[in-house]
Image (cartoon, rainbow, N blue to C red):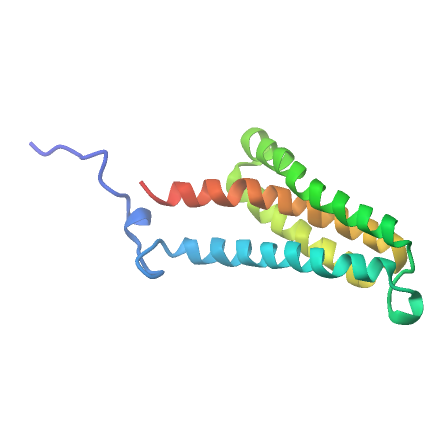
Length: 148
């Protein structure tokens, strides 16, 4: 009579094709890396874009207002992690929330690139902040589920 060991790794957990780690870690790493690049890259150039004059390629907002917008964006990214965690726990699950959050980030960058002026900045930053929050809250949870 054989017994089934419930603690034995499942085939998904035995797949160690990414430097000895589960293959799906590579995808999660890539998404998280680009989200971090997006967030910190935006922090570095957003204020300059906002307060440089139009002749210098910016929007010409006062420096104080521009820095306030950058601060609000940074805070919104971290506060939206609460929303992202709630959506994952109550509505969609971690994987779907991560997927849709990455799409929100992409749409935010598209809006920043294509919608002119402050309207594009507003739409883009809101979408990037919401997407980053959803991604932050769920990438760690998904990585934690890859290991026993």
